[in-house]
Amino acid sequence: MNDIETFKIELKKRINWPFTIFLGLWLIIWIAIFGTIFYGLITTPNRIGDLVFVVILGIIIGLWVVDRFLWQISGVELLIITNKIELIKKGKLYKSCQKIDFLEYESVSFDEDIQTPFWIKLYGLKGGKIIINYLGHKVRFGQDTSISYAEIAANEIDKEIKNRIYNYA
Image (cartoon, rainbow, N blue to C red; front, side, top):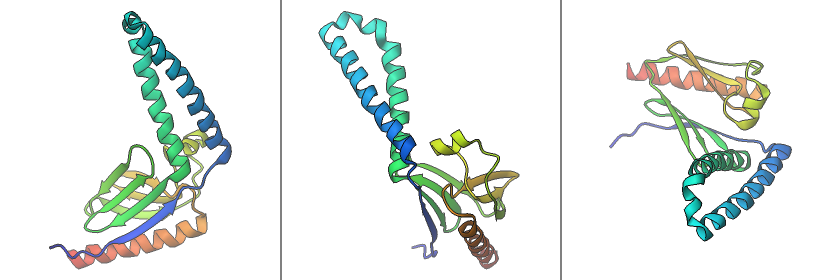
């Protein structure tokens, strides 16, 4: 059995109420529209061929909005360090996970995220104040954390990773 100790930082997404209410209203309208479309397809099945593209596109868009709505309500960013670095976004429809091997790791830093456009941060697609550099790339996390906490977390993460790298080498 593997007895590697786990280092974990969990950052809760702060709810952006105006945007969450907008997504909620959008979902109610989407349910009403697609309820009507599905009712129409059930009562007149010969129209299915005409509306297949619209239904498929509507379902994809609806699922994406549900994912963003859940992210606003219950989103959590998780950094886990065991024998690799894992960045996980959970609390939404589709959990996303990014794994970084210690051999790929370059550094960790923090800064105020001014490069990521506001609307991308609003949807929770990118952004964050803690930056992990690996293989010439950057990954950010900690979208709603303060810059002072980002500094503390970045120092702790760097210390933990360096400790593990030197102990396993």
